[in-house]
Amino acid sequence: MEQLQSLVGSIDLSSARDLITRGGPIVVILLALSVLALAVTLFKVGQFLVLGVGGGGAAERALDLWFRGEPERAVGAVSRARSPTNTVLFHAMSGVLNGVGDQFVREDSERVALKELGRLKSYLRVIEATSQIAPLLGLFGTVVGMMSAFQALQSAGASADPAALAGGIWVALITTAVGLAVAIPASFILYWFEGRIEAERASMENALTSLMTGRLQVRDTVATPETATSFFDEAGSQDAAR
Image (cartoon, rainbow, N blue to C red):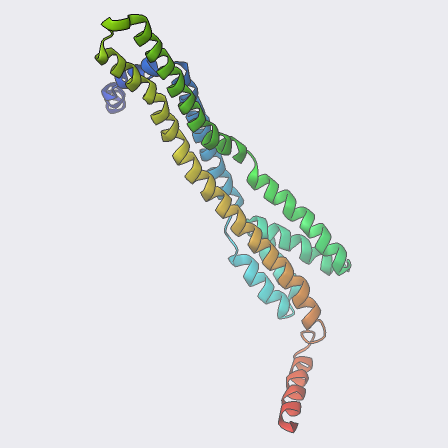
């Protein structure tokens, strides 16, 4: 406890206060946006971990079991694993086992996939807005600060102090620096989340397409080992005859 108190006491907040004092309300708005974007980022990271985003290994194992003629084990494999891809695949496999038509299974699985993707995209608008608005706010603060500096220069007339003008410009540029400091990390974070979501979307599409088209192709060949053997034997005999 004493170490924590000493750590908190060692943090110098004077520079932050000075930054807010010099930058004015625009810097306060930018700092509030950065705190909001950080909170959303932490929430989304936790959400992705809880939902198991990127865990596509169970889907591949389930498809292998499905095509080996073990549909019950395949459904069990995806039902025990967490990820949006596994949720969609579980929904599709359950529909197929219940005798639902292929077209209906695909359409309803796409509905589930859109629902899962919508949940992954939730609140990302906050980070996107921060990355776009922060530099504009910084530029706005700079323009306002420059206008004030030149107005003071005009009012002073011939007795204007160049040092005061330079100090006013420096203060005006603070808002631009803060705006870029907020926008650049927010942009990187947004691209990272969008990349993970796009990879999950591709995984869903690949798993669903593999299930539906693969099931149509092997429907008559995976029922029994004898059927599969006769199919390959027949193909080999036709090649030999050629």
